[in-house]
Length: 141
Image (cartoon, rainbow, N blue to C red; front, side, top):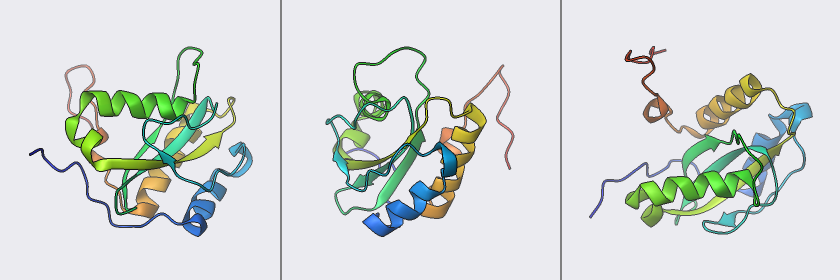
């Protein structure tokens, strides 16, 4: 038995995905209103916001991609694979993910802001995302 990562509160539907994708504005490459099974390639985006859902279709994680090198598959699929390799509970709980592909020239601060906005709209906490830097605790907002 493993610890629950986050069970999720909100079901992702095509309509909800479309609303979230529109938040990207001019940076949105295209809408992809279909979930991708974990382990499968998402496409060939460089930058993206992705929303992971559990087997019940409830959003349980929101992340972003920030590749530092050329990839042979989509950045979202690559990042998701990194998560499930490291954490057994994520591998067990995560079923599919939705991708909001962004232009490769999207500024990093826009990607970060969009990630926070999408997570907030879905009620997904980002607290577990805080990283320690320079030995200091992250600033709480």
